Amino acid sequence: MKKNMGSTDKIIRVLIAAVLAVLYFTGTISGTIAIVALVLAGVFVLTSMVSFCPLYAPFGLNTCKNKQAN
Image (cartoon, rainbow, N blue to C red; front, top):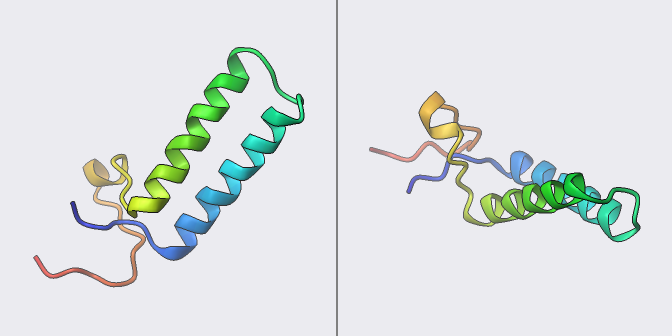
């Protein structure tokens, strides 16, 4: 699995995940939307940790500055 996420992309994803978590735990969002938001936050954190976004691969997107040799 090649890395396809740069550091800026990872930071933005973690910040969005944190905002979604705060909205959930403060009770600002609830119900189905809250569950979807928590799942999305989890996916954002997971993809940030492994530096790979599965949705980038089919479109050939790569925000990683260091190009890996094939």
